[in-house]
Length: 313
Length: 297
Image 1 (cartoon, helix red, strand yellow):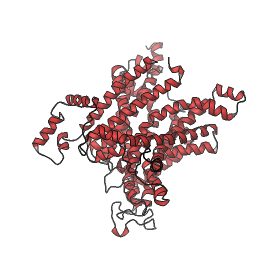
Image 2 (cartoon, chains in turn yellow, brown; image 1 turned 30 degrees about the vertical axis):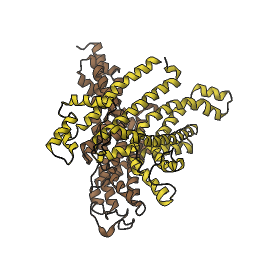
Image 3 (cartoon, chains in turn blue, green; image 1 turned 135 degrees about the vertical axis):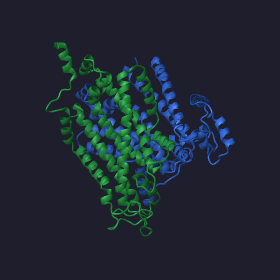
Image 4 (cartoon, helix red, strand yellow; image 1 turned 30 degrees about the horizontal axis):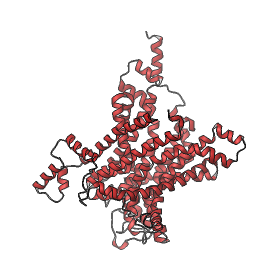
């Protein structure tokens, strides 16, 4: 067991190293001299020379990478050119906002996705099954930013039930917080729910066809017990670990959703940084997002092994 | 004279043609799926509309008219007009070009990067495979749209750069898929046979392995076009794709956001267009997957 964790942890290192390399090289895709971009309107040769020395831009690229990596390892993701604040502080400030949104979105996705998947498998071939499949197709085909706009039109503009934008922390005022988060969270959770539904349906169909479920039925157990206690427990293990992996999709989706609902989170931070050519922030956000994804991937693997005794050896 | 063993090896190394080829069976299986046929018809319809846009669009998609600002749908303007009086239907028809071209070209970029790298990794194995696999893992660890946004931002906003950004961000999926497929196929008897008769590596890869992994790549490419169309619309929505005044469904939705209360039609039509296009590729992708997988037939 410990060997497995050790191996998985060791496998993380090269992946993280490659992620850092990709992110570092992103800046070098910029046409022209990065020092000129950083100098902005200021074209004073002295200022440019100072920037070049400060960011080691006068060094060869591999040396620049090592300087940058050393900073990252010590928690220094650079400084925002626009806000003049350390990127790490900005990330830590915005992360809880996106985390709250993503958590509620994931809860919505799990409830809808697993619910629809189980019903679809149990009632295979019925109107419920077709309805659930149509829902899944709708979920993966709808651009979430359009869904967001349509929900704002319906629930904010027409009915006036929910606020169209803004963010309040759950710890500040949970009612207002839920009212402002429910629409963006649904928009985010919708696509994940569709993916989870398809996987749940497929896993449930396999399990429902297995010998032990047939035995449970043959023993005369009520269908409800067979499905809820016997089938679902085994079918949902891979689905829940898949949920952890879908977190990356949530973070991608958050970029546009936060933009539409004016939520001051991670997604809005990266979009604002892109438009202000604040490259240190773009690099920092991409690095942190990738690290979160890799760690969640690891946790999903560990969880999978923990709940599946056959994989422990 | 060719001895028996060599004849046997040659037989294994030659592709076998039959009257009812797997391709014909797969096409028949695909056409039996109503949803997939509906998807195909929708794709043909949208492609036709995009190609014929200059002939069928009722107005110039960039022509502004201050007398027609935000007019509701009418006989003169079937889908209404936008905030500077441009005809929404004409912009939708021209916008289809941006979406379909972006979907197709970005996946062509992804395939042309991903498939060769995946073949190299899967066929050669060893250090090259380990290196390419770690690189793929690293790229897949960065959420797709965030990577595309970062790339598009660094390359500069334009439709061409958006396609490159989407293509590069999608490439790792094809590297991983091709690698897995090659590793399965390369141990098959007919590949062993081709190797035994002295075919060079490139010939084995191109003639004997590639045709057998095409179905899996085709399914993934179709589903990826759907994702790429959403990604292009997302980048254009953020101002990183098609630049104004050229029309694109994403940028139309961006400007529509400001006029939701007074002109909701501005947001409805482009969204429906994106949804239907993406849906059609997903339907065909699902149908192809089922048609090409004998277990699902």
